[in-house]
Structures are given as structure tokens and as C-alpha cells.
Length: 199
Image (cartoon, rainbow, N blue to C red; front, side, top):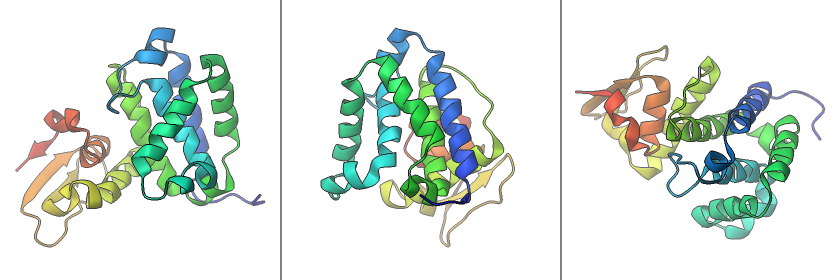
């Protein structure tokens, strides 16, 4: 256990508790079978995935490069327990990040922010996104897009809510929008495309 705070650790904890608050407000039907931006995953499955990231060495390394299989295994594990038990687990997860999560809090904050928005947007809800989380979502999109869909490389990205533009040499198109919408689009959430301006 590391006896000191690491960068983004407090922000990661806070976003975990905000996600729990969102999930606590859902009906049982929405929690178990509601639509999210993660294809075929309900909110409880998304929660299972983000909790599973805290146990990286045990739950992900055995799958090697089969990340999708590892992600699904976490969702399946969450499916096997009651909502009450899963939310108890989530509260412990929020308050007590693992050492690996504390060390990678800056990365995990973006992943968590994206998945929180998967639930929020999938169910037609809204929330005010903290500034650090919006930037983390944008950063997550930049990183994932490099190997998922190359949108980061092909577009000059212009956040309209407080971040400098990002452009790789040779980018021939431009995409403008909030950090959150750009980040989600970069990760392949095409439902946000109408919120962006392209040129």
C-alpha cells in the first residue's frame, strides 16, 4: 500500500462515487437491462467492467491480448451477483482503489469518465461533467483512437470548451466540439457525431 497520494487519485475516487450516485438513481429495470453506449452492455455490466480494472493482475493478465474477452468476463462476473451485493462492492471499490489503479489514476479517470457517460447518455440522462473529467475523457479518446480508428491522426481536433487544439502533421479534416463529445467520438461512440462540427 502506497502511504501517499498520487496524481489524479482524489479525482478518480470522486468520479467513482459520482458513477455510484448515478447507478443508485436507476430503477431495477434500467440497472439490469437499460441501454448504454457500450453495445450489448447494461449499466450493471459497465459497472462490472470498471470495477474489474482494479484487479488487473488477476482478472486481465490471464487473457493476454484478448482484452475484449477480459472485459466480458468482468461484466459476466457482475451479472452473477445481486444489485445490492454489486453496489456494496462498488462502494468499496470507490473508496479503496487498488495500488495499480492509484498508479494509473490519470489513465483510469478517462476510462471511467467515458463509461459513466455511456450510462448517462444511453439512458437519456444528463449531468454536469467536472472539468478534470472532461479533459480526461478527451485524453482517453486521443489515446484509444490511435489504434482503434485513427481519427486522432486524420483530424485536427478543436475542443470548444477549454483545451488547446490537437493536430498531427498531415491532418486533412477538422472536428470541433466539447472535450466530452470529441473524446466519446474518438473512442468510436458515433451517436455523438451530430454534436460535432466537421470541416
